[in-house]
Image 1 (cartoon, rainbow, N blue to C red):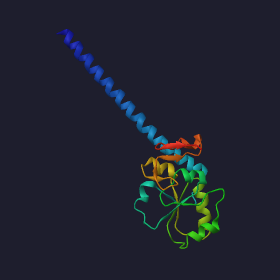
Image 2 (image 1 turned 60 degrees about the vertical axis):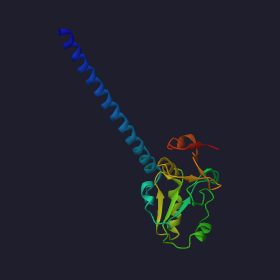
Image 3 (image 1 turned 60 degrees about the horizontal axis):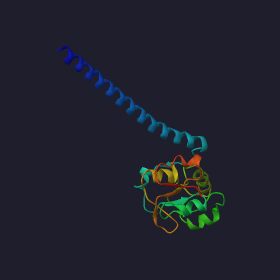
Image 4 (image 1 turned 30 degrees about the horizontal axis):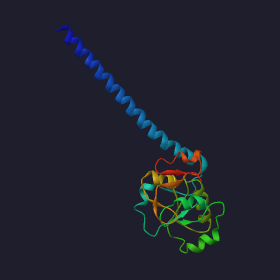
Length: 182
């Protein structure tokens, strides 16, 4: 009997240790998720001034069909993949006159995106200055779009998992899909 009592105590002790390990790992996992989101928020706060309101990937599904997506990345990025029906406007060679010819109604909802939402804010500001009233910046850009499991297409309009990740520094924010750096 004394031996079985000791075995029961060891078993209880082992179970308590396992529960503590499980709880610890759960807290670590949750905090890593929260830190990842906070870091993206900090990145955007550091690089943006908040002049263009964000729209979040989970919210755009309920947006009106007439919303226009503008891709503010460079052409090689756009050709690898983009949001279906998005209009390429670029960043370095952005042409406001050409863009405004394609966007006749200045009250049409416009969602500008890039890789994460930094370059798209600059393009959104130019559109606001040109009189467009419903301009939004896609929070987290095409990376968050893909991370949420939404479809993207390549230059042949075929669904793809490839995403131009810009470079390894920015590419760390892309968690889903295949990173392309060329």
